[in-house]
Image (tube, rainbow, N blue to C red; front, side, top):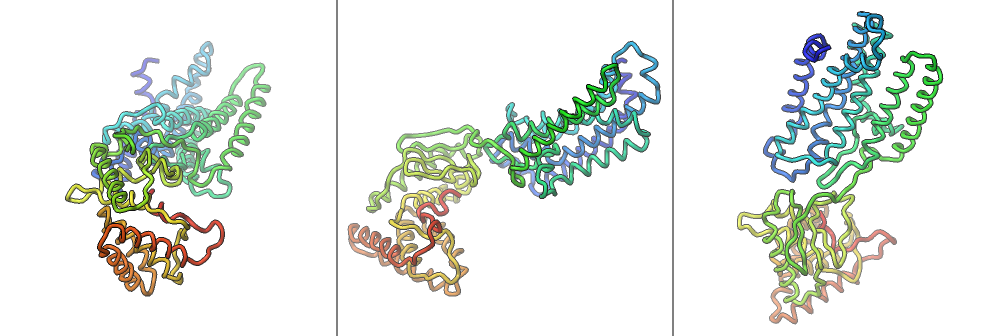
Length: 473
């Protein structure tokens, strides 16, 4: 059958306004319901993340539409007695030709939002970025096979709409499962999101496809004809069950919205040496790389001049490259700072106070560790000494404003929060008012020592170094 005649006779053509309208509505309304166009295009932009976001609404529609159209076409083949009219042609070839428009409709439901999103964000996809799209297109083919067989065994006028609605409901509700977890990861609607610099790991996109393909192969085997159809059916069924069980066991070890992803793939651009400062190239603020490095270097130099014992890192890397849960911890040689985030939030004067603040928190260290959180009934003596020392250092690098905002928020949980803040300011001003640099440095070291002496003992494992607090955000 010629392509024009095939399309003209296919249900995919006369239902195009329906599934095309779904794509248009959900793209232009649902995808921009929470984020405006300016927020979407403002960055940071990462192709794999945008592809995943674009597909999230459309998996269930694509699979449901494909199954419904394939069911209708399968029923039409049976009703028209195509197998009796063309016995010399292979059943697979006839079915494949008839199902091509249904598959095309399912593919278009996935492809169109991805293409529009990439055009909107002006991103070029990489092979790794389109892995979820390839997975979805493969699963669409599997649903087409299942739908075709369904159309041969059930009345198409009933089976097509019911099958499409049931598929949409099943896929869309898979994200609500918590026990067992595996349907969330194997339904073909990816439960895991990817952040900037991340790609889906192969297992995340491969297992849903394998499950769908194995089920479709088993269904097709039971529909097949031939002298050896029984062994083929049994083999296909056993293979489908084995694939499902093994995939379910694997996916059950993943958490909710926590399938395997691979991080740290965003390209970087670096400047300078000792420290070498690197920022995400596609993060949206890399044009300020030289300014960012100047802030880092200047802050380190000011702290050294003030007498703070600073270990200059060899590399300062952009925390934008990893999400907080997967980001490596800062070390003495490598710091992870929110370079892109702070560069985008620069003040009207062009200075990047957030960078200086992050450098401060990584530079000032104590001989003890402090609690990761402070409760409202915690003693405040050590807090005053610690924060006075840090505030003094914050004035050195001109980062007192972000530091005071952070401390004010934390003090809000105390009944005497304003009083604590006033004491911190008073002690910091006392240190700054000392007549010589040596005296100011000696006061700073004494405040740090007092904070450690006055801090109550905490259970083992319940501390975190204050010097890194807030610096990796």
